[in-house]
Amino acid sequence: MGHYYAFDHRRVCRNAFCILHDISVKKLKNLKAHLQKNGFSAVVHGNRGRRSHRGYSFEVIKNVVAFIKNFGEIHGLPHSHLHSEDDPTILQCIYLHSGRK
Image 1 (cartoon, rainbow, N blue to C red):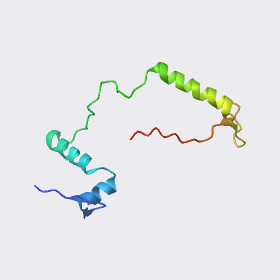
Image 2: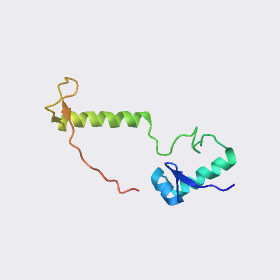
Image 3: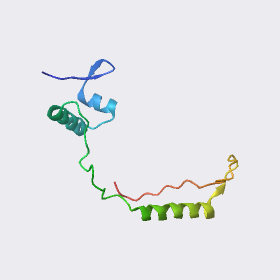
Image 4: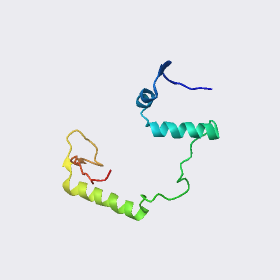
């Protein structure tokens, strides 16, 4: 049985299908392979049940949150449109680039 790609009830080429659904050709191939092997079932991530190597401990996250709150109290700008007594300041938007891809 052959297959074809469709979008809005119209046949389209594979590349157009991927662009319209915002997925890569590799992801599409992986989904097709999963469908053929497992049928219609959820794709389970390979790291399920394992801690991410990119994860941070609760202590590190707590320290980062405290740092950001402290930075906001020191360097935040008063916001004239907020009438809340809880958080009357905003932080200036800054862009930090780590250089990683």
